[in-house]
Amino acid sequence: MSVLEEKLSNKTSVVGIVGLGYVGLPLCVAFAQAGFRVIGFDIDQKKVQSVNKGNSYISDVSSQSLLLQVENRRFQATADQSRIKEVDVICICVPTPLTKTKEPDLTYVVNESEIISKYIHKEQLVILESTTYPGTTREVVEPILERSGLKSGLHFFLAFSPEKVDPGNIKYSLKNTPKVVGGVDSESTRLATLFYRHVADVVLPVSSAEVAEMVKVFENVFRNVNIALVNELAQLCEAMGLSVWEVIDTASSKPFGYMPFYPGPGVGGHCIPLDPYYLASKAKEYDFHTRFIELAAEINERMPYVVTTRIVEALNACDKSIKGAKLLVLGITFKKDVADDRESPILKMINLLEEKGAQVSYNDPYIPQIKNSKKPSISVELTEERLSSADCVIIGTDHSLYEYQNIVDSARLVFDTRGITRNLKNKNILRLGEGKHWTSWEEREHILKEPLKETVKEPIKVREYRTASNSQ
Image 1 (cartoon, rainbow, N blue to C red):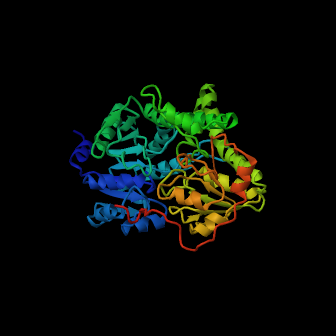
Image 2 (cartoon, helix red, strand yellow):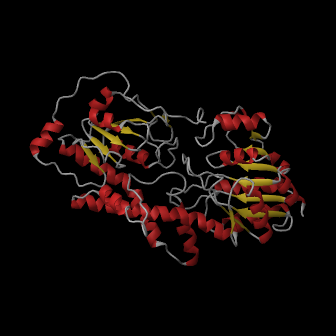
Image 3 (cartoon, rainbow, N blue to C red):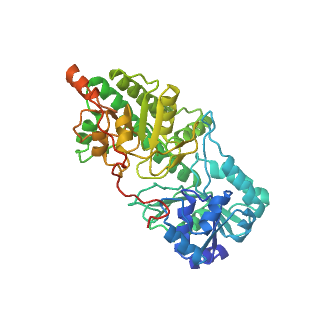
């Protein structure tokens, strides 16, 4: 038994995790809870300070569980990457964005690999978790690490294990989601498998790092393609005067050969909007063009434009120009019930509406301020007065905490991008994917020209929700 294997078996190895975001922080806490001593690395001093005070900024990690590991001296954070020499296992959980021309940007992976190469030592295991294209671990990370003079598979070990984080998912976590592991050699695979068995119920070793990398991008491309399919179906149903929501709900009754996907204003988060381009870029090295995959990505990218056009048309039907229209957007995160607006298509939609001259405000209890937009904005209080005075209320993200019946009753016109109101009977609702037709001009005039209700200043009823700092 090697020194590293013995340390992994008896939990005396020190674990280092680089990047304390949505992937890295939960991983740190999981290994600390399993009995390892963990050092978390991040260049963001605010994150480091927050972690060391036991204050979580990630919804999937409660402050209580984080503080417990900090107080037990199982986990501490630092910005000093020279301390990488202290650890036995290094997990790289850094961002892998796209360039402006939608090419893979491995800057963070490359920079971190160069730092690790300065401090790497014998009997050390390095694992890349950042989503990327097949070949990154062997072709990009390994050569940089070997600049140290140490040889992969002989002096140190290298593997890829894709993160599988679903923010806000209370059913599936790191523990009960199978963990895929693929090394650049068989010993690296074996050691990485041993390592992850301490925190995951099921660990699935595969034949190579490339297979593990392909597994990750395929999972997200699969979702992207199917979402694109229903987004295109939604547009067809609108043209045909049908409801895509009724079609999907009814098709879901089939017990085999089908799984439901739902349309929306686009896709968001770190993986689904990016992974198709990572795979497409790699495919070009083999003179292979992933036309089907790239088309799906294009369809989903166009959805904020599709939704914007529908909203403009809805206002036109009310004899209201988009220029100067008062719009209220409810929910801006890329997914319901999570405090994460990364790559959110709602932000793109808001920018498009503002470019057309609309006055847009938003409410999202999970995102008090939009920081990464052209015009910084603060979440407004959700009152009946604000709802009733808006020319159109747009349901951008279908958070569970909203009382939709109250919202629809208070608003003059509602545009629902998520289908969350499909069981409500109010006639002032328009939905993405539905060919809504007024039954008569008289009905339309009655709904749209009805006098505004007397307003009140009390907040509209909203269910209590938990933030990352107080969730248990």
